[in-house]
Every structure is written in structure tokens, then in C-alpha cells.
Length: 322
Figure 1: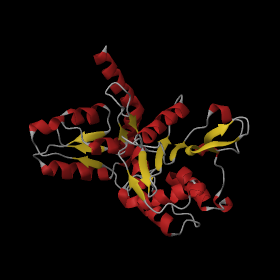
Figure 2: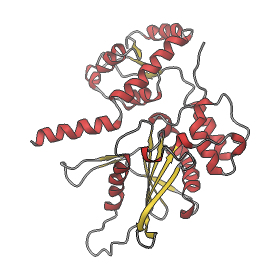
Figure 3: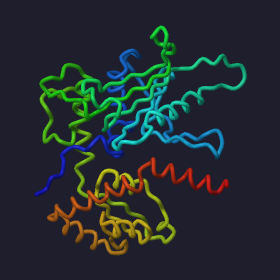
């Protein structure tokens, strides 16, 4: 029997970016940030910025964000979804915050005025120091004067949401922000839309989450040209992140990967009937598809997670330098 979820999991890279990191769904991110950062006031517009940020030289570490954007006032927002617990995650977010600060520097006559920077972590784990306090899941951190206990600088903010601590039931939801936390935590568990989630924003959220999760397999195809066997398609990695079995038609490294890890199949690019036969074959073999999907997701987490790849990249650069 199939156990395929109706809605995409927002705690996968693929699901998070499809729901919040695309231009077509920008209104979802605007509403979420407006509810999260009340002091900022209602956000009316966001502009997505490049998520890969280079250091000042080739020897400096780069930053790769899940979502990076700015509002109409030029205030910057980094939004990170972190499913797996990582050591020094707070250190990482502090490091990330230096990029939007430095990019505001102007050459020539500059008075050092900065726009606000918000670094937001949506976490599927609990900080070790906070395990004993189940009621405190929304951390908001600013620079503070330790003597007066007042905010010293209000334009650098770190927000951490510990998802496992959010325990409210649907009946207990009071605010729009409560609804966001509830749906982020429980979206893949729903078999249908809860009664309280019938408004314009959540209409779009549920429709999008269902649409992007409705496919059983992902197809990554190329023209039958030998040089394309070396290509590295984004869709391949998106499919792994989404936990989707992948159909490839290139005899390059993607064929080797799907066969080695049993996370998809290869079809001959010169024989379209083979693709039809494979689709018909897998239509009634749900358990095999589910196993392949699980393998795809495991491969994404163990091999292609951005933190793993960033470390490999940095180590490679270091080895060349030395």
C-alpha cells in the first residue's frame, strides 16, 4: 500500500525552495516574514538576491544560503532551513550575516550607515542548552549592553525557531504566525487541508505543496550528444532532494548514480518506446518507487548536502594553495 504524502515536505531543500524561494511564490515568503518580524512592519515587496556569496578573495570561504532577499527599504533577510543538527550552527549564522553587512559598504565618501540584517534559522532540532525548556522555541537575538540589559544595536537580528518545541494543536492556533508554525511542522502529515487554513495565502500554499509533490518520478533528459554525458543538471539534484526516483537517458555519470544507489532508472534515448514501457511498468509498482525515493533522499543528505559540498570545495582550494 502506498504511503506517499499528499503535500511536499518544507524541510527538504526542494520543498522549502519551491514554497518560499521562487518568484511565483514570493507572497508566501512575504507573509511569513511579516508575521515573524513584527517590529519591521508589514513587508510589501521582496527582491531575491544571489544565494551564493563569494569572499573577498579566492582564499576566503564562500557563503551559500537557502534564501537571500531584501525588502523595499534595503533590509536584508537570510532564511535557512536546517533539518539535520549541526555543530556550531549559531556560529555559522553569525558568519553568514557578515556577507549582507559587507556588501552594503560603499566606495568613496560613505558614512557607514547600514540597513538592518535579519538571519533566520528554521530548525528541525533543539539547541542543547535549551532542551529543558519546552516552552521557549522562538529565539530573537540582538546586540545588548550587558550592564543596562537594553538593546545596543537593533539592526542585526538573529532569529531561531526550534520546530520540535511547537506543540499547539489546530484548535489552539490563535495568530497567523501560529498557523505558519503549525503548517511548517505538519504539512507532510496532512491528508487534507485543516479547517483553519482557508484564506488566500494558505490556499496558495496548499495548492503549491500538493502540485509539486504529485509526481511519482522525475525525468532528467538530454539530447543524445556525447558531450552532454558530462553535464551536471540542477534538476537531478532537485529530484534527489525531493526524494523522487529519477529517469535519466544519458550514459554518463547520472546513469551510474541511479543504478549504483537504486534511486532511478536509465532509458535509451534512441528508443522512446522503452520510456513508455518503463512508465507503464512502474505505474503499478508503488513500493519499488517508494524505495527508490527513499534512496534518492538518503543520497542527497549523505553526499550532496550543501555543507558537505562546501567543505569539500574549501578543502580542495586549501590543498591547491598549500
